Image (cartoon, rainbow, N blue to C red):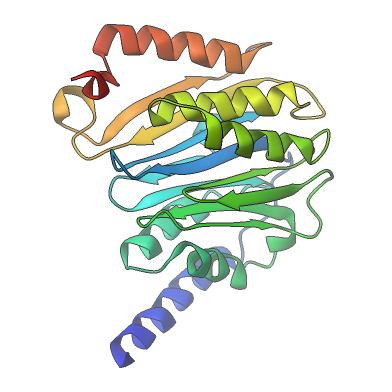
Length: 244
């Protein structure tokens, strides 16, 4: 117990040093996203859509065997690597959310979703995130969004993820499609991304990045994301392990 308390104190100090003076960017990332875990195939994934260019370069973070993180609204990208480090140290999702936001002076502008190695989900929506903003957690997933047309977006995403069948990629895409069908980002669409990690799941089994597809600027980015994913899956059979 004493060792763990020391680790916790050191971790809080490191995170606070990293986050305390991070300035707010000029542009908010109006976004809806989902972080999720497939306990059968031990995959972690993030899927996201935003009225913001190249959202895949900012929001999603994941590490095989560790967990996944989505950081958005006035995003703090340092939440990604810092949060994965804390997860790898053994802290659960709820604790990681608290540790990341504790010393961030701009936390009220942030939004965050975390899934840990046990499938525990936690999320945070800052008090001054632009409406509608909120989140919903469930078994093996968390969905979150800001500047949405309404709360139906996150509820529809959660329901779609829980009821969809197939591999994690298909369920994440179903969640994005349901969120958009429910109204999505109130400012419109622009970019989308999906990141899924699995041990030795990457190209030739030499990395953990099983799926990493992005649409950086498109009038219908979710539909385009599915099209690009289908091409990649057809070429490399990235989900063929389910068919063996």
